[in-house]
Image (cartoon, rainbow, N blue to C red; front, side):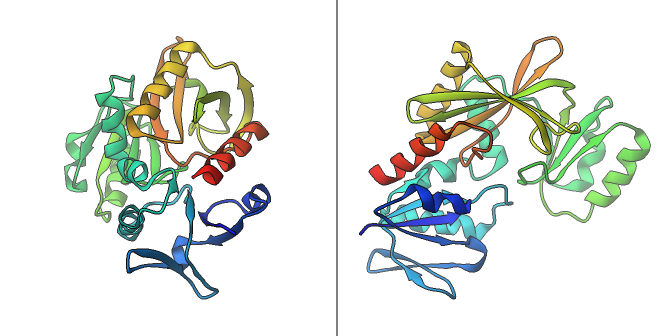
Length: 270
């Protein structure tokens, strides 16, 4: 029986792998070993020697250890969904944004500093959005609407040793996630409770993907060699659409059951 190693991820995935031995481990409590070119994942419960890896780390701030593990997976040759090579390309938010920009996709403009002491040089007209480092899922982000708030935030950010980006605030009408799995594409229109489009979602609706945006997400998918990838697009009141980010470990909440079946089939085929 083949062994699927599920890295983090949702508990329900075990229902999609009948006929496979599925072992779920958390990166927070696991260590990885390569011995004689074979890869092992070790935690307090067991040692796992996987035949394939299903990487579902989710909205955690990536750590250097995570990158080391991806390099070990690449070195060992164990198939992974997405591949370790693909996940390494999108490991950091700056590299992710650079990929979108190089492909000529309408990515959000941003200013950036490697040290918080230089934030005084990045202020733009209010309101604007400040993002710290590589966090996901709405974390590490703040909307700045006044000079007083900006001064307080700069004092708070001073303790961080990570890069900071500053972006123009887009008063969005909808956030649209285009999800590509293999040759299939789905689209979901979403609305958050507050200004963060991708957190505390209150409204969502599956919509017909627009041909133009199918082409854009497929261009990205082919470039980074992804089995699964999503782009998050903000649609402003004037109809202008801007890509905020791409996600190579996208959540599937709200999408049809077909998406889970398609990605589990991909893991099995690996």
